Length: 408
Image (cartoon, rainbow, N blue to C red; front, side, top):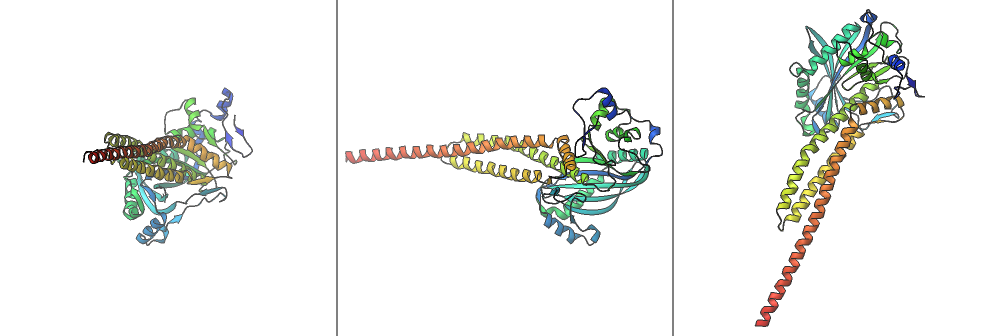
């Protein structure tokens, strides 16, 4: 059964009886149940791309204004619209650029979609493609949702992503520090419902529409186990709102319109993207580090302490750089007083395994820290050995000179 705490947040208990499970995750409703039901809302596709180590947002705004004469495309700093600034705030608000209307071919139809981009100071950008719908039959909404997902997920047909990224790169490249090739990406798709053509309570929604089919993209009936897995991350605060999260899709009902939940999901995906970037960066750096240390140890001469110290400084710089950027990513969004939004944000981070990837990054940083600490100690030890050799040589020279004086 659904339980509710004092905040109004609904959650799933760890254990439940078969009857409770059937209540929470009912079987798919018959197709006739949704006949005549229409939906007004948006189909939203997000693609997050890592384009640089970091980004100067003020310079990005200046460069874009220099390029554009259309006031409608003037960049703006993002803010959370429906939540108190004390409850939720951006560490450094992303820069939003409106790219206007574009055309997207899905099947035999051409659709007008609104395109916007948000730039984050930690080197990520989020491209949003939004297809508004008004009084569309539910089954047509599901079909269009799947069709857009299929087109945008196919690199051969999804030229719109490449075109947008190319436009941004040409203009904003000077403000991107250490640009990347943009191959690291995360996609997420959201079905956002503002309202239906008839009043439906959240409790009765599962008897009217098959949300599991929408979130899975499957046309064949799903098993009860699959439905339970898909609908497990389910949240509701008011009587007329609902959020269901999966790994790559979300279903949201919010009569207020553009909800802060969209921003929270975007930031969670951006954090996953950046943590993956740092994880892959360290994966590539660790073998190189081992090879450099091994090469330095094979050569023992008077310059060995300097080589060890140079390597140690390089690894220390790497740790400092990655640590600073990961902290900036971690602090991209602060959720304090809004318990409902905080729980959705936390669930998204867990679902996307952001914390697991972040922990892997921390472990690899610890390895690098241990390595440069050992190198500093080895450099100090090598200097000590060189001093000992120098002292012995001086003593031998003194003895030799003394013997020469005795003979003469």
